[in-house]
Length: 164
Image 1 (cartoon, rainbow, N blue to C red):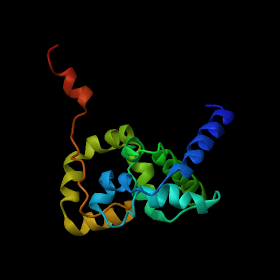
Image 2 (spheres, rainbow, N blue to C red; image 1 turned 90 degrees about the vertical axis):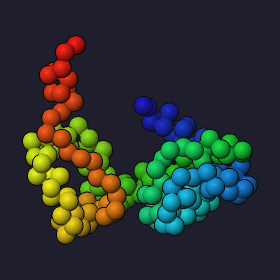
Image 3 (cartoon, rainbow, N blue to C red; image 1 turned 30 degrees about the horizontal axis):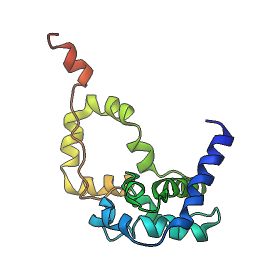
């Protein structure tokens, strides 16, 4: 994507923030705000905070946003809330660095290849509470977050053993 196109998209999303009338419809529909008090809601970290950011990073509560886009879809004023939040998150990551959690979670193919040979060991290890606590602290995910079960065979390998 060209720099000019990125600039135009960023300015378009930012231009919509003045349409926000603070009706809080986005907050009532946000699945993340519904389940954790740690996320103040899309309006607060989006249009409301954007007015004061001036290209600076925001508080880390923005990192709780899942980026689902429901806030943008339900906004009766057409504010591009999810886009504003995504741009603010990009600034935050550029200023503060990419956490290990984000680097690992986005590498699903790599994680699958690495975990496949060690599946039974990995599953057993994550079942041990003290070890799970250490892994959660290092990676930066909640101890209560569900972890995917590792399998000792890839989907491609499983399909090769089946008849067409």
